[in-house]
Length: 334
Image (cartoon, rainbow, N blue to C red; front, top):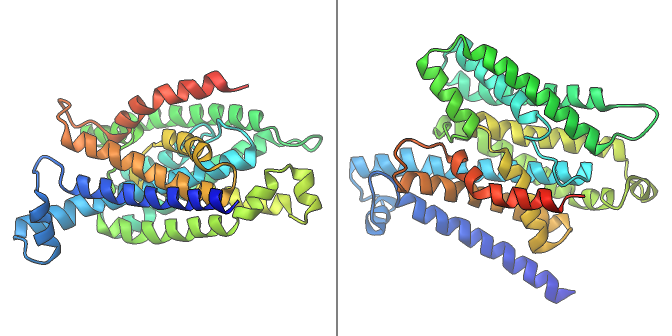
């Protein structure tokens, strides 16, 4: 038992080191390449104005955003898949990301604001859109006569997501060229919120929500044994379900607000985490978060390092890399 625990702890530590390593590579990558020695001088306060600008205003915020968006989507996916007991559940398949994105786009189109207020308005509206979408889905899926079916939830989520996509298309008719370009990149997954004013709001929220999820890891483990078993062990299943789904929606909505639609990360990272550490959520939650952060950071580093002929959104690279694994999951689904 201790040997298996040690392996999981070592794996968790290895993932932390891997994410840091990817961050080091990312900070030295881009259209204007900086050698490690130059970055080290900048970190020691000996860099030029231009070098400081590149590292602290362009590279660092983007790296941090990529990691925390990945953590948010990865942990959100874990919660949804565990509570719904369905491997295909994620913020994207449930239509929650679409609801969050619609509210973000409405704000950008109607208010054109880039003031400090938008640092609070965008996450708030994204959260409202995600919660509203979740409420609609659960209301349409709810039945007093029987337990809520995960399959029904996902099918309802797909339908609601399609409705939100139609509203987004209608909204796009009012967009100018710059707004249309932003919408297309957002839908593909684009780390656009790499600004310290956004990160100062975003990072504390993600840390608090992930911390709460870790605190409830044992509750999630118990619910996974079955609702009746969990009730017999003293877990208030309905209360815990609502509170944890609220956290999952908040995590995905905040991530969507500043990073766009990275639903593939919320779908795949939990699967890989379970294959690596098993079903214990004390390890699944942090491993999935770190995998999500690592995947987005790696994809973003690739888009900034390799010339692909145009400014390709990070989500496109993730989709290309993740599609084979997604097809594999579908082939193994019952």
